[in-house]
Length: 258
Picture 1 (cartoon, rainbow, N blue to C red):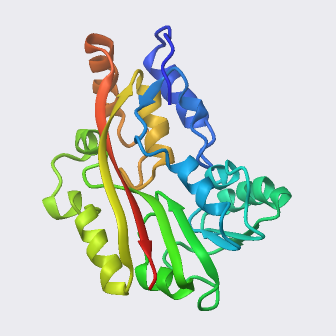
Picture 2: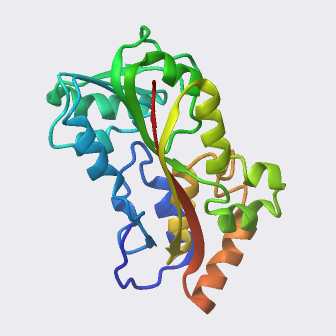
C-alpha cells in the first residue's frame, strides 16, 4: 500500500465506497493513496521465486487469489496451489492456470489433499495457521518449507480500537518462537527465522473498513453497520489528528525436512 495526497470525503461516502469494494484475492491496489504498510526487508516474493526456480514440484498453501505465486518468473514443472474461499479459488484459477499451475479447492483447516512426499518445496504467504504435520507429510526428504507468516500483535491497534483490550494468549498466538517449536516438534529442522515490526498508516476511515472486510479474522464478523459509533469516532480522530497508525508483524520461516 502506498501513499498519495487525497482530498477529504464525508464519512458516509467513505464508508459506503469501502463497503462496495470487492475483497477477493490479495490485491491491495484499492488502498493506493489511502493506506501505507512498510514491507519486510527480506523480500518474500523475490526469495520465493528464487526457490521455485530450483525445484521440480512445489505447493503453495492458502494461495489467496494466486497473486504472490503468479509473481514468480519461473514456476516448477509441477506447481499446485490450495485455497479455501470460493471467490479466491476462481480468481487464482484464472490467474494460475495459464501458467500451468493447478489450483485445488481445499479448506484451510483440512488435511492437505495430496500423497506423502509429493513436493520439494511448500510455500505460503500469511497462512491462517501452519499445519506442521501435514506440511512435513507432503514434503519429500530434503524438501523445504518457506513462508512469510503474520506475527503476534499484528495490527492490534485496530483490533483493540473496535474490540477493546485482548488477552495476552490471543495476542501472542502467532509468536515465531511458538511456530519454531511447532515446526521442530513435527520433525522439521529450522534453517532461518526472522521477524520484523512494520508501520501501517490509514489515511481515511474507508481504508479501515476495507481492511477489516478483507482481513476477516481481525474483527470477526465485522460490518460497518455494527460498528458505526466506532467508525464515526475514528473518522473524527483521523480528521483531527491525521493518519491512524498501527503496526503489522511478520516473520520469515525456512525449515527443512531431514
